[in-house]
Image 1 (spheres, one colour):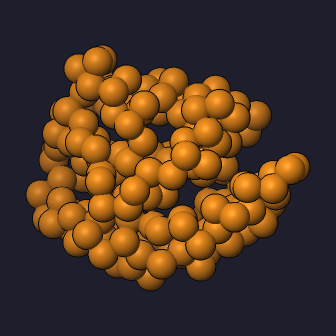
Image 2 (spheres, one colour):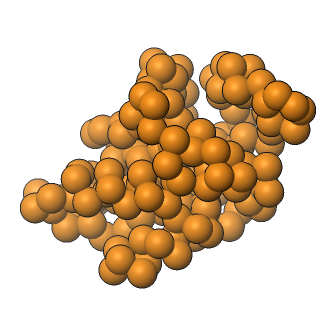
Length: 158
């Protein structure tokens, strides 16, 4: 079995910048924010990194995107030619902070497997996973937005 490379999507391989304005208003327009995900430009640094990892790792995606966005996300990953073996998404109704949901899902999917790298753009997630002993790396090629951080950590939405 090849070792696992666990990859986040938003901010790692997908540029969410163009849809953040949907979260600046009150109330936040979550429907439009997620609906626009199909139009995310690729982050070439992240896409290139995943292509390199695919050569000798089993790539799995661990994202805070909601389950109802699965088909669009799978199509987007295929269009970038970075389809992995599995796509793990936020469970319906789960509004816990990303650092908690991702830690739990990572432990489940890694059961009995070697996780060689976890790549995420959220400093809170990276800190939590590193503290738990996971080999995690912070993706820094897209500045982490305060709006997205609030959505991930306070509102448990992505």
